[in-house]
Length: 443
Image (cartoon, rainbow, N blue to C red; front, side, top):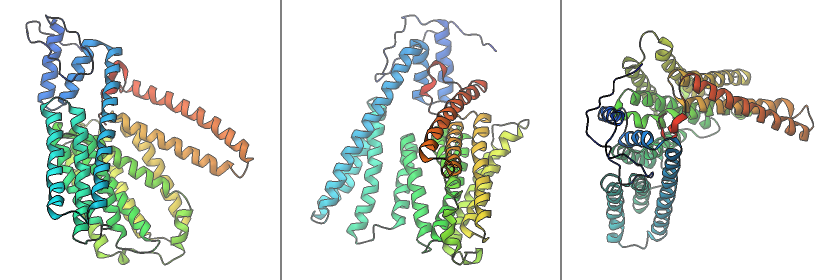
């Protein structure tokens, strides 16, 4: 399929002041350059791509693959160094304040809480959106988000409230989440998702004491994974929110598959099943309310996502399989929390089947929806599970040293084969990294 490229546009491609690659552009742009710029501008204005992505496309078409890839690597180095520097500064300040908090006068505390927080956000905003240093600015914004969490705990300490309270994590999450969207920062989105997951799990664990509380936490984590993934699906339906979809989708997939993997071992159930098994009626009202809210919000998000799906009617698998897998994770969340059966074999079998389904579901859905990150998650857990089963089967049958040698050779072979298969899948379905698409951070 080809398109005609206009040749009368006289606009020139403007190079950003913070570009990491030296782009040589002729004084008189070619017709193709003018056409490309007009198309990229339309994509950017419609929200399909961000400002940085549009500039990356123009840079790549101007400088070619080798120099563009060098620029991308340099961009990543800047992000890593800026983030590490900002985190070190924040850690030093927070440690100093925490050590001297009780002896500080009230005005000094107020200054650190309000002025310091505001200054971090203002400097980050100026660098990211005004001065043209988006990576350094985003790193300082990230530091401000960490500072906000420290402020929440310091205020609780000053009012003699327990800092081992999960509600503080929820407050931190509520303060950080809007910043992620205002700053259009995926790193802050990842932080917010992590804080939310820890807060919900911690909250669930406070309602039950004893070994069975671990299963309540895992049940709430399954529900949280389903919620995160469904929110990511919702983000994909809005062009201006697609930037934030990746952290939700990947966090949900990693959390669900990771939990399923942990619950495939007999030892996890042995202590709890020797006690009185929880049933549905013995769950506390608070836990039922939390689990019910998580489930209801997830189902509502799935319904909206399916109704606004980009997949047409000729691809029902792509449209309904993904919500079906999320619904299955919700069901296993309740199954894990209630433990309705007194059979270790039944639980282990059920979670092994769930693990296999989630692994291959991640790979298949990644292929159908062209999401390379999901394919990688599925392949990684496939190798982990295969290695685990090999160790379980052979460590008692072979000499230990021989088992490790054979296992190492097997892992090398499996890794090589899976990498070749992954690349072939990506090429076959058009998800390639040729031509410098390393810059693509889309999930």
